[in-house]
Length: 384
Ligand code: CAA
Image 1 (cartoon, rainbow, N blue to C red):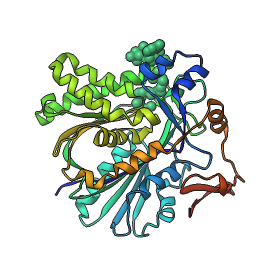
Image 2 (tube, rainbow, N blue to C red; image 1 turned 90 degrees about the vertical axis):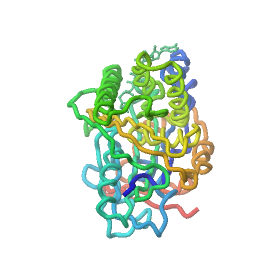
Image 3 (tube, helix red, strand yellow; image 1 turned 135 degrees about the horizontal axis):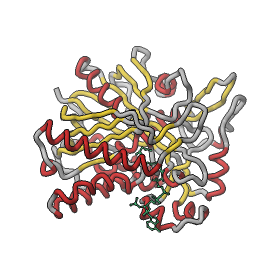
Image 4 (cartoon, rainbow, N blue to C red; image 1 turned 180 degrees about the vertical axis):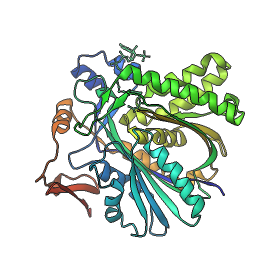
């Protein structure tokens, strides 16, 4: 049975900052941020937004009443509660049936890939059902930190089913786990701790080890792929991994892999790090901005600090354009408003606490945090 991604939706907040303005405010040469790091804009989530509201926005784009959803998994490292899963809030917000399994997965930026692999097993056992896997995160490092330029926010929702119309999983996958201190966020902290350069090094090492294992286990080489998609914490990062292949392959091959890589990071450049959604935003970006071929076999590298990595192949389905609403996705990026660095700093420093109430007139989105009462977060769907 063929199983994979049947539909895919994307959401990012309606406000952003310009990376050149950020560089100037931090007294850094803008080329460092736009070329050295490779970012142009950074999404800024508003006070009423979090991993719940963004997950709802992305999923709302792709689900319908007829989908026989039996499982909802949210991959996130920006959860709103130590106990209650983001997925459970979605049952109300998205009018999901109650006879579903729902839970949250955490392993840094690997969460959504873990969710997809579980969803694949679920559909294999329940072929008439679908699974909704959502990656939803806010990447926060802190004002004037080295990681600030790599912040971002957004969600990617994927419906996994049999006979998928967008991407079929090939069952060719290799994975590994090492206990590494490259990046972490203790429960007391709203911002991540990162050993930045060490995290770059571990990312590349994981890719190299997994690529070696993948070639060995499946008797394949770079000639079997025109496209490799990467987890994109910032657009230069995946290129660092891709460059490890440069000396081993024909220059034309490297150029074509680089060209496809650039189309896959076009959208990430505009929003920043989505953490666990970043790899899947790269997939969307490649499908919309690249030149994907029918039945093209692609390689996906998922990396979650801490660290878990997985390299797997999948095949683009010939009907993918019918199930990917590229105009809607482009609008998500286009219909945004630039804010100043000081406005961003004010928003960044706000933190809704007990007693918080959103003024409905401030809400630009469909789903929002309405209030925090007795430390319980209460959400609402706006009827625009
Ligand atoms: N013009 C052009 N390029 C310039 C430049 C200029 N004027 N000045 C500097 N650069 C280049 C540097 O040469 C460097 O390029 P290379 O990486 O190719 O060497 C690049 O800009 C960055 O410069 P630095 O290394 O000096 O930057 P930094 O010390 O400020 O930190 C960072 C960069 C480590 C990525 C930091 O932003 C960070 O800690 N980010 C968060 C952690 C992260 O994203 N890690 C990625 C791997 S882990 C992961 O993937 C999981 C995850 O999602 C977090």
